[in-house]
Amino acid sequence: MSSTKYILGLFDDPDEMMNGIDNLQRNSVPIYDVYTPMPIHGIEAKLGIKESRLGYAAFMFGCLGGTIVFSMICYMLVLDWPMNIGGKMHFAVPDFIPITFEWTVLFTAFGMTGTFFFATHLFPGRAPRVMDLRATNDRFVIAIDAKGNIPHDDITNLLKQSGAVEVKHNDRKYVSYE
Image: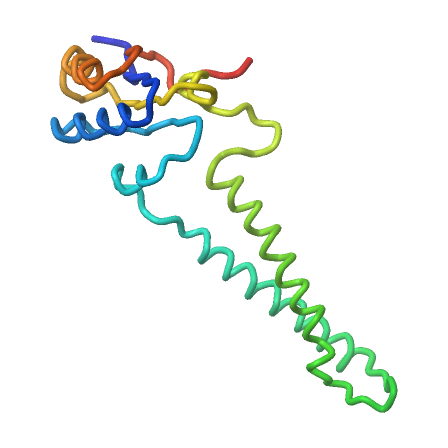
């Protein structure tokens, strides 16, 4: 039994990589992931990646921040320690709007930062996980899960026909920078 976990096809050109994705999908080879040194327009649709739900999380963090700070202001300035400042009412909502807005933005920013780190496993101090180090510099990499897939030689031939410069058989999931 082979110890190969992933088959990596390395490409020089993004157009050849896109042709490689088409070729693999035509032959019913499931693609694990694609790594590129720059964003490529349309690759999400081609791979069937769903739209991000981070916008919903941002909305929820904003609602949470606005509710918390508005509740705090109401409690502190209306119930706990009401003060008569210039003859204004204690519950002067227009005065609460600027600080409520600022805290809503603050909660959204910090919440989204934490959510992003949680979703991508890019916590500070953690070594980045990458299939091939050249994917961050000058190569376009298609990763294919080798377990339970068609014979490895067929996948290698499909990648070579599509224009892969190099085909690697990895026995580890990630390569570390160290």
